[in-house]
Structures are given as structure tokens and as C-alpha cells.
Image: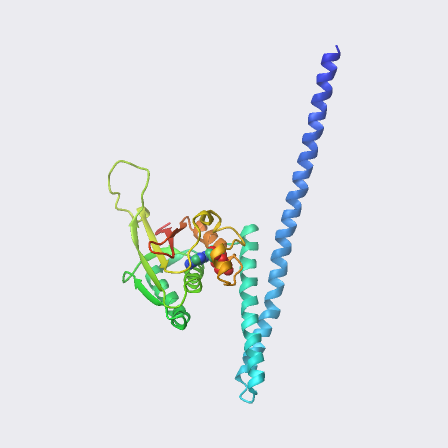
Length: 273
Ligand code: ADP
């Protein structure tokens, strides 16, 4: 009957549409993959020329015979090429993430030591802004993680705290082991390392983040209105990479407003895995 033919025709049409959709999805996937590969290739190719520019700028800086004008120009070259290198490194990390090439080198390390090193390296920048930096760290905080990647996490959070805190403000860094809250409710303390979480808390008295913007904070290229209004420059890539590194370690990172103004970032990582 006509009813049957009609139903048959509609089924065929549905099938055609589905097939078109599948092809479209396939094409988009392929384009996305090509975009990722291009990103990886371009950023990788940019690293060598930038390294060369920085290298020669350094050699020139060693030359005692420079005039003060030449010295000024050289400072700009140095500053701008450093900035460019950071951007390219960040883009390369994101490309690696997208292509599944961000691999971790997990080894035993002392998180307290790593944090002290990071603090030490950021001290001049904090001093330049008259920021009070206080640290509450245990003597040792042994765990297993990728040391270079964790340094990247600490460096990013510390440089943000410094960058987004006006002169005279304060930064507090606390670290320690916490018992991991797990779902097993037998009430027994298993007493194993697996149950422990290494926690680092970085708090600042800075410009803060508007409440409704916290949910976007770890998205690529996102910059809070407080940062833009204050005219502080940035790319919005650091926290996206930071979260990806923490997540790859099986950990979590959260941000919250600090009582009395400012921001608190909390990183929690499984201590042994
Ligand atoms: P960038 O600093 O290059 O803009 P990030 O990804 O590191 O990028 O940070 C994203 C945004 O989060 C920043 O632009 C800023 O708005 C906000 N932010 C990050 N850290 C802080 C902080 N400590 N205090 C206030 N805002 C912050």
C-alpha cells in the first residue's frame, strides 16, 4: 500500500541524512587533527629561531662596548624574545595535549623542596613589587610525580599570584599531606600511602576574580575582567595548561575567593601512584 511505500521512503531519507552527518563528522575530525598537527609543527619550528635570537642577544649583552642606546634596544630584544618563547612553549604544550603527546615522567620527588626552589626563583619578582611572601612547608614532602611539570604548575601559580597582586600585598604558600577522602566507609584507617594527598595552597591578596567567572578560569584564552580592567597583560593559557598537568597526575586544582579579598588556588595530588 502507499502507506508502506511512504514509510520506506522516509526510512531511506533518514538513512541518507545520517550518512551525510557521519561524513560531516569525519571531515570535521580530520580538519581538527590537521589543525593539531599544524599547531605542533609550527610551534616546534618557531623554537629554533627564537633560541638563536636569544642566544645572540645574550652574546651581544656580554660585549662591554655597547652604547646605552644599543643596550636599551638589546633589552627590548631580550624581553620580547623571552615573551615569545613563553608563548610558543605554552602553545606547544597545548598542541601536545591535543595530540596526546604530553607524557609524564613520574619519579620520586620532594614536593616541599620543589616548592622552596620555586619560591626562591620568584623572590626577586615579589620583592620588586614589595610583596610579603610567607611559606608554611614541612621539612620534606615525598611523593611521586613529574618534577618538571610540577615546577611548571608552581611557577605558573606563583607568577600569577605576583602578577595579579598590587604592590604591598601578600602571598602565602602552604603545603602538606592530607588523608584522601575516599568513598569506602568502613571507617578503618588503611594506613597506606595510596590514601594520601599532597596539597599545595597558594593564596594572594590580589585583584581577585568575579564570582561568576570562576567556572571559566581554566578554559583556554580566558581572562577575568578584573585582570583586563587592571590592564595586566596575559594570554589566558597558563591555567589551562596547569589544570591539564594536574589532571594528568590524577589530581585536582580549584580556585576560590580569599576572605578579605584576593584568590586562593588549591592543588591536590595523589602522593603515591
Ligand atoms: P594569563 O595570566 O596569561 O592571563 P592564566 O591562564 O595564567 O593566563 O590565567 C587566566 C586568568 O585567570 C588571568 O587572565 C586572570 O584573569 C585570572 N587569574 C589567574 N590567577 C589569578 C590570581 N592569582 N588573581 C587574580 N586573577 C587571576
